[in-house]
Length: 187
Ligand code: GLN
Image (tube, rainbow, N blue to C red; front, side, top):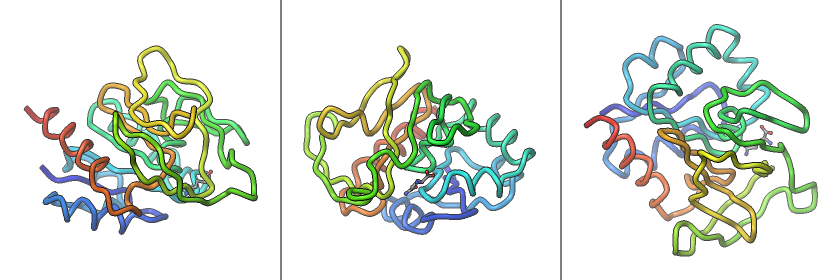
């Protein structure tokens, strides 16, 4: 069950380490054709506009097909890429999650912080770095984590996204939930 981590830019290595700690076989994805050989994909944080540039039109189309068929988990910039609607500024999305997301939504003073939120029924440390905010959640989208009143992790079908960085906290539950989803999808 090889899991890919999109490794064009951003903090892909922290995801690789976390997934390996959980026993996954990890492939660092740098070329579109590598998507054919994996069962799930993590799109890490970074700068979503830069991801779009590096992907190019062909990479974007290939990724769009992948996220329609296979489990994908996006964090921060990855969540922005997966959305149907992106604001501040408007930007192309893969359309895999019916959400509207606003980039850099917390302003300069609190642009990075560690806060405590809720994942299911329990508390979870959440690291936010120039985080986006999910402003609208479509009817088919399940909120799986909140911070205050804000949804900060969502799931729609095989696609999951978080506006924080679970790969930077000790807690492994979020990545475990993703691997469980990949495992179920394989059956
Ligand atoms: N601010 C970045 C963006 O808009 C996301 C930040 C991150 O991934 N840590 O793409």
